[in-house]
Image (cartoon, rainbow, N blue to C red; front, side):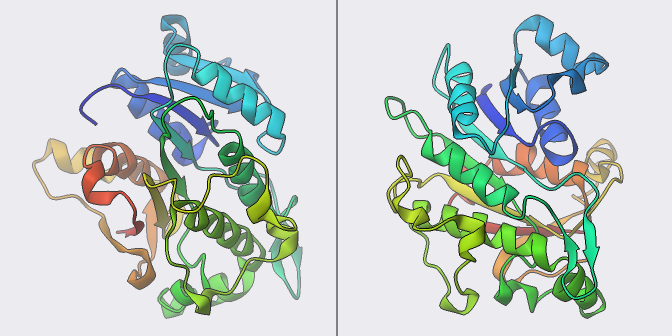
Length: 281
């Protein structure tokens, strides 16, 4: 990232979205957060400093509400068009467990519907922003076959319902970006995307969302950012990246994935745009 950006982030109250936002803010970018509970940042000294400087903006709302998504775009675009939309939405509560389905989340379409709401409300009187969507390894049936054998029970059983939601989000983005969709991956369930989702008002036409990237991390951990430590010691990056459809790995910390978003993808956008990228140690 050579110059500060104007960023809209959904899923930024914690984890990958939060860590990426802090990096962006510390580099001079402006970041607008859509938050169900803006009070989540009341005791966050780092965010509070950026709020005081006007670089961090908080919008109260729910990504599952299209009007709230529209309000977030309006606030983020108040001074200039949004350069980057970053979606790191993921289920953050405690899932229920079903002996036949694995971990069950509610709502089952959180990631997909949040993304649809934001894509359908992109301002039409401004340049189309860059879009980065974070999902997870194994989100598609074909990529699941590439995950480590030892993790098969997790990807094929425990994470079944969340992966259906991630599949829906990736299908939506592929449609708007004009990417070829592998027939072997099938189509997401209607309960995930909604009926006739391709006809939703405001959804970018196929191929119009050209500046888009999907990041699929391996199993996410709360470990430290090894990349920062490696840079201080003059060592190579500790994580690997590659085409998501052929990628395999065990873990990646949320902080290191955030590092790759800001220090990798955004700094070398021309290298990464239009790709689905896997990342792991």
